[in-house]
Amino acid sequence: MAEYKGIHGTKIQNYTADPDNAITGQVWYNETDQVLKFQYVNTNTAGSWSTGGSMNTARDRIGGAGTQTAALAAGGNPSTDTELYDGSSWTEVNNLNTGRRATSLTGTQTAAILAGGYSTVDAANVETWDGTSWTETTDLNTGRRGGAGSGDSSASILVGGESPAPSTGFTELWNGSSWTEVNDLNTGRGYGAGSNAGTSTAALLAGGIPYLANTESWNGTSWTEVNDLNTARQDLGGAGTYTAMLVFGGEVPPRTGATEEWNGTNWTETADLSTARSTLGGAGGSTLALAFGGSGPPALAATEEWNGAGTIEVGAWSTGGDLNTGRIYLAGAGTQTAGIAFGGNDPLPPPTQRFAQTELYNGSSWTEVADLNTARSGLAGASAGTQTASLAIGGETPTVSVAVTESWNGSSWTEVADINTARHLLKGAGTQPAALVFGGSPASALTENWNGSSWTEVADLNLGRAHHGGFGATNTAALAFGGESSYPPYDNETESWNGSSWTELNNLNQEKAYLGGFGEYTSGLSVGGVLAGGPVLGTVENWNGTSWTEVADLSTARFSSGGAGSTTAGLSFGGGTPADSVATEEWNSPSFTTKTISTD
Picture 1 (cartoon, helix red, strand yellow):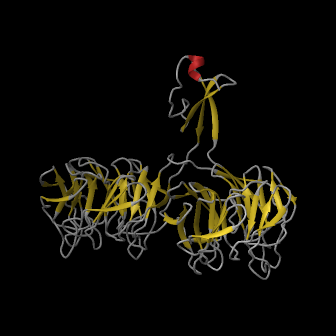
Picture 2 (picture 1 turned 90 degrees about the vertical axis):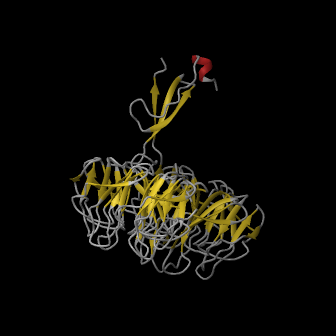
Picture 3 (picture 1 turned 135 degrees about the horizontal axis):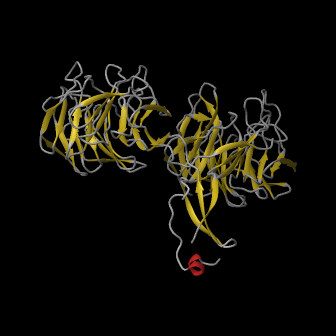
């Protein structure tokens, strides 16, 4: 291909946004048309929470500061612990000098101030953080717990709190060396949410004891009442600034996951936390935020990451062609335009019939081709297999689990070497010559590796499971998630395979089983499933290699479906709805548009 510079005498400009106000994309040169093109993607129109790395120490009434990818957490109930977040995991660092809970913590990961709190009495203690250690400094004028703050270690504000009760409206300003009392809140309160990414002269306080919706703004001199929260609450978390803030969780009662976003004038309800909680920590801003710890009860270590509107790519589901044979517990492989589905059983109980049918998808319709040699359900496919080279592994006949493995060459199935341990409800990854199977019923942790001619048992999963999700491009890079280890509840644990061992990673947002899905080790979708107690889900979660984010739901909720393709273009087919199990849905993300850019 000719280089753009060689034709036009200049390099391609590095655009980060479409000239016509598209959201994001990349520039490329079309040699045929000899024009510069801009390819951009649509991004999400509403924010969402996804699972982050768990804290090392579960705790509530915890302080938080910093950003989503560089956060600081300190104190809690009861704790002197300090932890730093790097966008995926927490690391323990030097402890507070005085352990306490219900403090005000504000600032950055390298310059923060922690004030007040409670241990055995209401504390006036203040400590500053320099990125490495805590140093005790000048005390507050009034010791208290449950205050909120804004600013950093050089200039901050502490407002409200309990000393011990009732709640106060006290406001104190920090100038880097001492505290000065200034004008009080209009409504005294403790355990509200402060704009911890704000400044000492521009801050916001929302909610608080006793179950308040009141919001007040600070201009450096006085507090002014502004528009209330939509949901009155106390013990909530917050992140952001004077003009752009997020509040989440709290006690209504009961505990809630409700999230609201402030635009400088009004609060708007948006997506809830995955886990309702109170007395939690918060960090970041209204676009990229972090919620961690808190009480569920019990005390939590779970972390959730907020990605606001326009910060992540999203996709959409559309209707594809129906399967010829409706079924659940089937397997699949291939791509959105060249998929393969095989095996399964009756969609309605009792599931007496197991299927041998194989069908191929051409992007619009399914065609029946040669059957499996052994009819079965709950079998695994090599998830990165193709329409012309796949594996069908294990499963269940009407009477017994089987170890049978069959290889597909594009026209027929041939029996090859069995897996070592017969089981069903297992999952597979890899290709026809290099595959992996893992898990299975009853709640197995077994993992086996296929080298093209035989199976070898390798390292077990950390959590034995069945009815789980799983996929991977090779037998050295796979993902296992969710499922059933005991009935109920179900699990949300995620594990990755590196070719020799399984490692636990960030959890799904929901504990669920009977999962479908497709993708690779670093990018995939968990599709549908069942919650403990029986609700069938249309929920879809996107895996980005680090964490799960909820994206667009299926049009029809389903469980134990087949899948094929990638997070850019995929298929979900069959499964229990609980009745209509022929349906196919096509996933497309991101939505690409190409525009011509003038090069004059």
